[in-house]
Image (cartoon, rainbow over all chains, first blue to last red; front, top):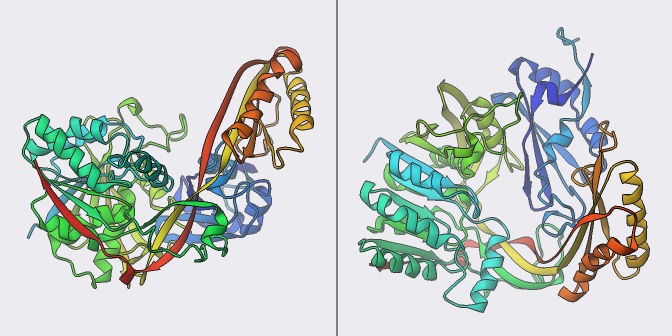
Length: 108
Length: 440
């Protein structure tokens, strides 16, 4: 079954200079290993290709069953001088949550 | 020595609501109230106001916030720590004294200075972001070091009721009273790491009580029109419990706490502040009641030997124009408008940005939700080296009223000076902070 990340996880976007941070937090903590397996850096890079130009690093935080994606060169020219409407990228958590992944209750 | 202190956070950015801080001061049974009001660009803008009038340059809402808070702070013996001094902590302290005198309230105010390092940085220094020189960015406006607890602690040792600072690392505003009350050593890194975690959870105020979180039907938050801001009970071992005043709106749960713990964190193993390098990967969060999160774990290691400096520079003037189209073929007409504008402006405005608000303005993509909207708003933005040049973008969009596609309405045009921010480092020895006391 295909699900949107939106259905099984939540996210918050943050910005530091021209770096975008996106957390990815499953509603059910038991989904965490599944998210680790499914939401790889390569998949996020492909999904956000219109938004992130630079490298993406993924951190796995087992202590809070959450992932953190740190994205370099997000948006057009760095946060403070971007011409974009949402120059801080506050809304970008919902871009990540649009990603679709394969999901089954048995997690196979 | 106390075994527990309570610190509230009544504002998480300069434009934040006023009343959550008043409710915290009134009913929160606080020892300390922190107002964090300084974003990256705020201080550069404040510096410009100070150049215009040297008594100004502090937070625009300072007078209103202090007026509304002062009687309650005094009555309940709550000490206020805030970075509302922005580009002028001394001017801010004088203004607070003036307000206190008008209200016949006797207080002491400590102004913390030393963050302004504009005269100490070398314009030929490289930026962290681009590895080019600072001066290559543009005309420099401000340079402020992110100071830490060692700048605030001497102020806490005085009898000051209010401590007003300029640029500080946000978590330091919260960590300083913990160190002061619990007599933690500045070389005992683990408590400093734990305290930094709690400061980080509190520093955006409403962002841990359901603000920047709610999503109806998915993440429901009650009472957001009167969102309560958080406080933490912090214990001498560095653990804490985050909660809010009973009866206020909002929610504190594992979800809000996890989102805030990771907010703006670029490396959860090494969260840099001037006080400590904190490790967030060993933090444990637990719901211990309604709107209560217990925070344990977290650690720290030796603080960096440099301060981060945030440098503001004049980047350009941004000109914008917007116009809306609705009904059948709204997108077709918006696209025609775009081609007219780009044809006319492409030579004088390289890098012109065109967005369809309602379709692709935020994410440059609609992913799979590409159903054409009933109405669409065309937004055009460009860079100019003068106000007048940038204004042309909005003027051209406005002229579409009578020279463009059918049914164009609701034009708005804007010109704003854009201040860019780059970062660099400065050795701690070059920076000297000091405390100045004022009495009403």
